[in-house]
Image 1 (cartoon, rainbow, N blue to C red):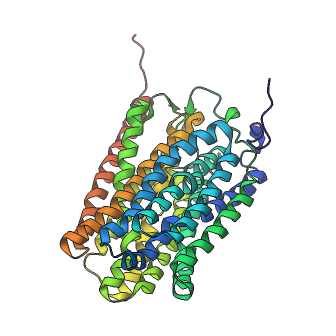
Image 2: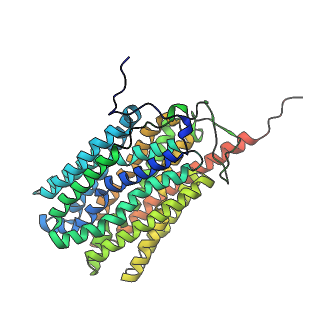
Image 3: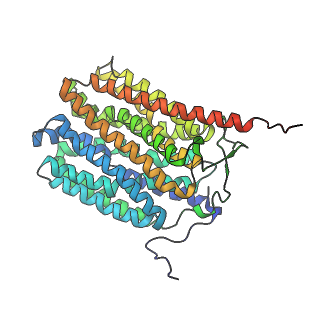
Length: 436
């Protein structure tokens, strides 16, 4: 029988490593990988005004590279999730490091908006996708007692990237131009990812986890598990495919709404006369507050479960979007950007927790990849749709209203799933009387 290659990964870790010091060090390495691998998701928003001016295209066309990158990131998440389930994380991460480096360099040397867009598609499909869904799924398998906060820390790397890279890239644009900045960023992120990937040889202890066919349901109002059995073959009382599809539709809807401020805040500030630098600062502030939001949401998730956390985040995100409509001054926009980051930061990690709570853990990589794909398609659609609505109307007011409508769709789906969970628990807890 052939032995596994040292490059692919070692055997599954023993169950004793769950919640261990090694799990904590692995989480720290994961955080660094997410910060480096997801840089392209946010720097493209910063260079949008410069790229639009250089290539002479409209706002919708200038938003297409972001849209293409997010769609490819979502599609790539399914593939990288399956490859990580099968072969381990390290080979997937090494290939992703090369793609991130090559994508940034290609974008920096591109001569048209289409070349620029295809380069971002490459980064999304093979590069950034390796450091998003697979790492969230892997983190969920290494933790039990603190699973919510662990996944939140992993996911917060995405927002750390958003807080860290925009001001650095904006400074680079002003100093050496966006093209040289992109090439330099590609080298830094690619090499950094490659070095960190070498520390991810160990497979997650998935084989030893949840060996029993039924697990306990998440607690209704506390960290302790409920004594009620949870049938993972019927998540939310639905067929797994149906439950997965509902989560995917919810993911698209919430992230169409989320994309409006994140993708267009720099361009919005430029249109209002505040300048791209102020917009980059607002984006950085928004995502820095998103870090806090994700960590706090992780603690909340450990107490009330993924579905309730997602419902809370969706409701607050709708409030944040509504606040952009009546206020367009410089100081109010800083405050609302911070509030929006605090409100919506915990939404995407909640999907990974829900998958871990209600579906079989052996399928975590592929299922989390599918839901994350849906959220990224939502980000892509929302980024392009907002630019298209701007081109039609000449302002962003209608785009904000469009985001609020999509957020309402998400809120409706998640609210219905929450109702299904409550109904299941009520039926299970009802005492069964045998006939006399």
